Length: 223
Ligand code: ADP
Ligand code: ADP
Image (cartoon, rainbow, N blue to C red; front, side, top):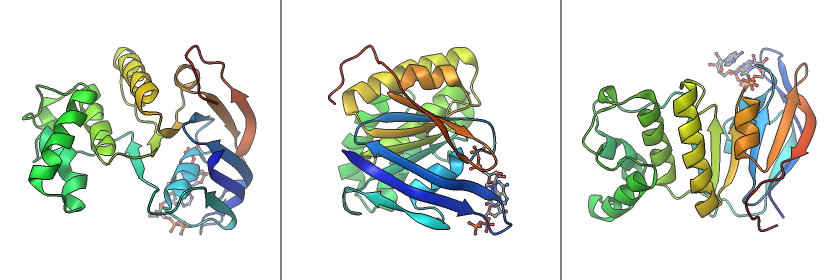
């Protein structure tokens, strides 16, 4: 059953841009759904509205879980790491902000670093890391909060094809273990088809869903 339902969403920005019009979308729990479509069709707007960053102009977003049970994490194209902090400190940041003690967060941070392939890089600073490794840190910083919904906005958009394909493989393996609900924005249709259970193609002027395609995945699914 859906964890998130977007009902007749319209988003008009204050400058008059109609970013989304009458958008309906139900996302089942543990689905990996990709949003693809031309620049400006409203993909980021959908993610931001799901994240609660900005209001809908009309329509509603309904959740099947309470606000307390809802643990969202956001990953952007720009890894946005703290340059003065090493990998371990960057990943610990959300736990620190949630006032978890260093002692309590230590194990969780280390497990998460290992999960995303950053063991051995704990002491490195962002400037010493490649783009792909920086993105791993950014993903670790999201996963350390143990989210049930992962929102990703072009996370691999700035990476070369080889790094992107390696990270895609690792992300898919992680998803197969963890089964978060994922909403993944990408320009890359191949990436969307490789990763997702479902691809939503969006169209422009106004932003809306023009195709909703289930992907027949080669691994077992619960539904
Ligand atoms: P809202 O209509 O939801 O109140 P605003 O119009 O206040 O949003 O814009 C929020 C922020 O987004 C502003 O800082 C604005 O400069 C920025 N922004 C404006 N136009 C765009 C755009 N086309 N794409 C991305 N961000 C934009
Ligand atoms: P996408 O992620 O598909 O590129 P966006 O959701 O960023 O699309 O933008 C959808 C439309 O809304 C675009 O026309 C964009 O310029 C506009 N837009 C996005 N953010 C803002 C903002 N804060 N203020 C005004 N217009 C915006």
